[in-house]
Amino acid sequence: MNFDLTEEHLMIQESAKDFALNEIAPSAVHRDKTAEFPAEIVKKMGELGFMGMMVPPEFGGAGLDTISYVLAMIEISKVDASVGVIMSVNNSLVCYGLEKYGSDFVKEKYLIPLAKGEKLGAFALSEPEAGSDATKQKTTADKDGDYFVLNGIKNWITNGTTADYVLVMATTNKELAHKGISTFIVEKGTPGFDHGVQEDKLGIRSSDTCSLTFQNCKVPATNMVWEEGKGFNFAMNTLNGGRIGIASQAVGIAEASLEAAIKYSKERKAFGQTISNFQAIQFMLSDMAVRVDAAKLLTLKSAALKDAGKPYYKEAAMAKLYASKVAVQNALDAIQIHGGYGYVREYLVERYLRDAKITEIYEGTSEIQKVVIARALLDNK
Ligand code: CAA
Image 1: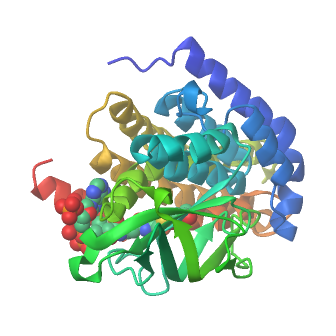
Image 2: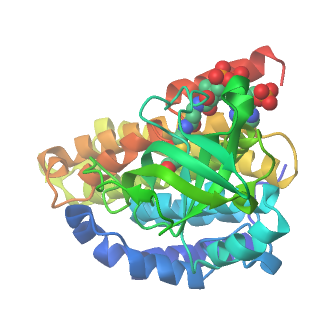
């Protein structure tokens, strides 16, 4: 077992860190307040290869491994978790699925611009009555000659108003329950496809989240991804990789909280000395650091398994479950160390807590991760 990162990994980590500090950090506080979407930043990330990191170069991507993706996601989320989730959805939930399951036509027409970052993608599985219980899809797709006609509502869609292409899970055969679900690519501007208003969220405020509606929305049959009836498997398989992305986002927030807490504890004086001299603070910092390392190792392990072509869904669920908990706990501890200053916007730690909470909810709640892990254990996988 070798814990050293390669030269290439270190280079990617460094370039993501530079980009995050120079291009993302200056506007992060402003965008948290205004909930403005970071369109220019996302465009530049596309030019640098951050939007299709694991896609082979022949399909417009950077051709890197999942470890590289984790390292870049951590650096970017450390500075702004809103940008982290925009990047994660495009990479893990959209590009990955199209590369693995898309036809030549789909790859040529949709994957290439998405991987180059010229276009942005979204992933639409959740519905008003199908969140954790994702098999209960009500959105329908009825065959009509060379088209499918989509009707239904999707909820909580990251990149919902901004995405050029949305992957939509819809039922093509109700009789077959989850085996009757299929995946379609719907282009922005298709008649019958619309979006709701941006959600006014607690955290990750400059990412764009909304509902989507489909009313007699005609989509060419060639825009079906994989085979008819494979849409639920498509969603589950892509979400396994998505969970590695969200675990990385959570590690980034946890690490940012630790660094902020160390810095503040060395500056703030109480009882005639810096508070870093007090064991109460030192113990908190130690616990925070152990948690960051453990979460990072779980996340990198799941990425290494994926890169090795081995099963990784249980490990991805473990990484997301643990890293998201750590993100929330570290943000809470960072606030505690900052005292009253941690509770106001002058310091960044209150945003870390607001941003951290969603990592325990989206791409499968912590409870769903436990279901996935327990089933794998009981099935001896
Ligand atoms: N990986 C691969 N396949 C999986 C899987 C996994 N982790 N979990 C389930 N499946 C497969 C099963 O093998 C089964 O396939 P077959 O029928 O082909 O054998 C199929 O899915 C159905 O599985 P179950 O019978 O276990 O179904 P269930 O209803 O009992 O449980 C669930 C399924 C695990 C709870 C699933 O519904 C789930 O993961 N729910 C959470 C959904 C989720 O993560 N939503 C996130 C929304 S996307 C989002 O947040 C994006 C964003 O914008 C940020």
